[in-house]
Length: 119
Image 1 (spheres, rainbow, N blue to C red):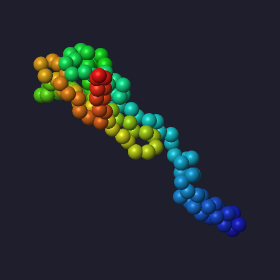
Image 2 (cartoon, rainbow, N blue to C red):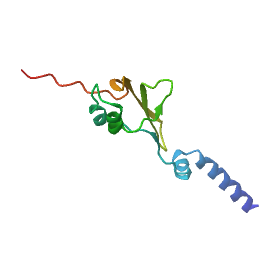
Image 3 (tube, helix red, strand yellow):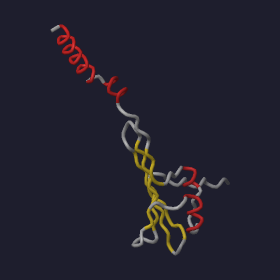
Image 4 (cartoon, one colour):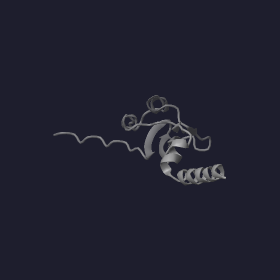
């Protein structure tokens, strides 16, 4: 009978500890950070200039993640980070061409404005 009481007490204690976040974090498996897509930095975007060719843009930003047949004049660069713990985040950059030349850039990363000319 005393062993049954110790066994029951240990189950109750173990059940109450299972609700603690510190114990749950210690027992939970390790999850890696998952990175997908093209990581585009602000420095890379600052190198883009209107009139650049597709090859020049590809050299600066890399091969686009999405190159749609129906929108041949648009390249999409998408980057998604899903950390092991926490919320996932996503960045998007779209590059538009006209006649094979860069016309505009849209998305989360902005092109730096040219500095005003000094007199």
